[in-house]
Amino acid sequence: MDKDTTIILMNETGLLPLFYHADIEVAKAVLTASYKGGARAFEFTNRGENAYEVFVDLIAYSLENLPGLALGIGTVYDAETAQKYIDAGADFVVAPFTNPEVGQVCLKANIPWIPGIATLTEIFHALKGGAEVVKLFPGEVYGSAFVKAVKGPMPHVKIVVTGGVAPTKESIEEWFGAGAYGVGMGSNLFPKNVISEGNYAWIEEKVAESISLIKEFRAKA
Image 1 (cartoon, one colour):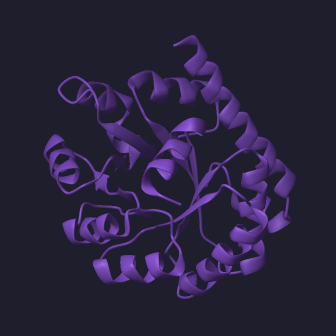
Image 2 (cartoon, rainbow, N blue to C red):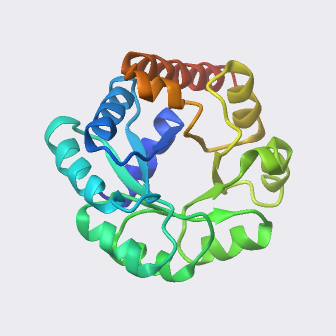
């Protein structure tokens, strides 16, 4: 999937679910539930020893069963890791901070690089390094006022907020009202008890609700 298509998919729903699990069957079930709920971009986080093996299986599974899904990798620190996942089929790469070397690898592969930012200077350097979308994390620390303030001098910057975003009307309206391009959700979409119970219908419903709330807000804005 090319870079422009992936970025458009992220914005169309406004939601980027992010998740990691060592069990491939659990990961497949969560990915499928998110897809059925309407998500068309999904971040699998590189946070476990066998993350790569699970990701490779997820890529094969999504290509066969989930058409039109952009599946990316998150928590990528360096260029070597980025290249490894790109070779495996990652549609985009998310990082917790701005490492220009990761950006160069993504640019060469023509896929989105979504680096973490926390200041205007970091946003400037991320954009200069080729990022079209940046990630504000942790959102609950900086708050929606930060996003709104940034949009003053940098009105065209595309910010995806992760951390502190809940699948509720109040949270969605707060972040998108401040100017967020999209929101990433992890534990609020995939609570541990829901995963342990295998309640994937709950996940599908919560993803669908979140996307619906985003659409409703955008329609009013």
